[in-house]
Structures are given as C-alpha cells and as structure tokens.
Length: 404
Image 1 (cartoon, rainbow, N blue to C red):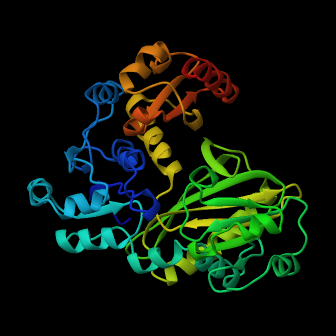
Image 2: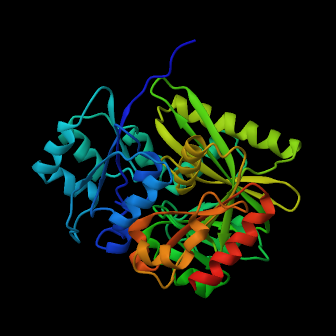
C-alpha cells in the first residue's frame, strides 16, 4: 500500500473577499483555521498574534503548536496575503523554517493569493483558475446543470441584463415563500449582506444588479447537509464527511456531527457527490472543498452552494479529530454554534465566565472555544463535545445563559 505523502502546511487564512477588505473584524478571522489545523512542523501566519492566555489554554488541551508568525499591523487596504507579500522579514521568517514538501493553504482564492504564491515560489494547495471561476455562484450552478446534479432552478442576473420582475416569476414559476437573490461572489449569507429575500417587485427593484446576482425560488427546507472533501494533486478524491448544517435567517450559524442519514437519502447524496467530484477532478480542481445540500419535506435534494475552498465546518472537524487522538475521547457528539454580539472582548473573559465548562474531564461533556481573534468583536465560536447526543443541546443552552 502506498504511504500517504506528508506536507508542511503553511496556513494563511486570508480573508480576501472584496467586501472583507478594510474590515478589521473580518480580517481577524484569520486566526480561525491556524490552530485547528496546524500542528508541529507547520507554519501559521496571522495579522495579529494569538492571545497568550488562549495559547496556554490550547496547549493544556493537548494540542501541539505550529510555528506562529505575524504579518501585521492591520492595513485597511490589505488582506493577510498582501501583508506577507509586502514584508520581506515575514517571508524570511517563513523560509527559515521551511522543510520538505511545503504547501500554501489559503481561504479565499483571489489575485492577492496568486501574487503571494508567485512571490514565495511555494506551491498552493489550490488550482486558482478553477477556484476563481467556480467560486462564482452562476458558474457552479451551470456546473450542476451540465453534470445533471439536482439543483434549484435559477436565473443568472449577471448575464441576463434588463430582466423584469414579471419575467423572473414567469421563468422560475410562482413561489409561495418568495425568492432568494445571492451575490455571485458572496460568502456568509444574509448576515453579511450577501443574500437578500425577494418577495415582490419592490424588493427586486431594490437590488443593485451591478453587484452581480443569481436568483432562485425559496423552498421549505427540512434539513441542510454540508459535504466536505479534498482533491489531491494526483486527482484522487478524499471524502471527509457529511455534516449537519445549522442556519438561521439565511445565514450559517453552526454544525452538528456525526449525523444519521437514511439509506435512501444517503444514496442520493452519494450519487450527486460522485458526479460532482468526478467533474471537478476532470476540470483540475485541487485542495479542500465543500458544498451545501438542501433537503425538502419530500426528501428531494438540491445541491446549493459549492465552495472550491475550505469551509468553516472543516476547522471544527479537524480540531475535534485531533483532540480525540490526544485525549482518547472515543465516540463523541458535536454541536457547534457561531454567536455574535456577546459581551466578551478577550478569551480571558470567556475563560472566567465559562470556567469548569472548558474542562475536558467533565463527565457530561465540555466546551471548546475556537476562532479567538474574533472574540474582541463580540463573536464567539462554541463547540459542545459530549458522549451523549442530547447532552450537547443541554450544554449549549447552559453556555448561552452565561454568555449573553
């Protein structure tokens, strides 16, 4: 059996989506992936340093740290990739700790990341041509249709200028729940202004179509499932898993896993996954990817949003996967939620309030805190880890009573 090749991971969770540039709170999400994924021998670069109290907490859980580098201070015109590209001292620090088989791992695939890849001369675990094309919602919807993968009907408003509201309704059909307009380059859902509910002509006329949208009918959803995988450099597809995706008001708020999927639904998912990943491998896709799947009341499935990059759930999955090994946790159930507008400004404050709930030796489960850079802005990423599934809900309710 061929031994899996090992790589030195250089993780730059660069938040380079155009709408994130200049927003300090978004740029500090660059601390989200690094410790969840990076281990001994890896390199993690962030804008600002991790809070020392958080690093002690992370190590006390049993995680080993990667090499941590910073490229700040924050510049409103730059993403993390730009900061590294324009600072020779940071590049020299990276090169000093390089070993065999290094690879760059980014979040958003933009020209900023391409420029840094060229500057460093280190291969990226991403095919930029593929990722830049198929991060666009109109492009991956066309991919679904061409590969005969079930998806909601849509209108590409980027290439269909001058369309009227009446024509939208005529083409998509009447929808009791209305329609959803999604920005072609959007990420994060309605909470970040990337998705708009459209119920009438006035809503449609209020859209700034120069920003680029697709529009779909809204359907009653019974559950959302996220599927994650990676395509390796030799074109092999490694299935990572199906995850329960939690949404609220058209925005992602968390995940739960493992999930139970009925055999008939699993077969539909597997068929769509095989078609999609085969097509992606043929087109030269590379690296970590994910896609959302909507399931309606009749168990019809609709492949919804393809992300030719890492998805937020992957960070939680990797953190738990590593923790299970170091602490010999055995089978556990996970409930993860991303909260905003909490009262905290540092991890130290979180630690003081949650106290013993952070202790992994608790019989009824414990809480894992990730994404530390975002805490100062009132965000808090909470993962409940329990032996019994129902205990995750009880523990999450307890956490919520303390953090608000």
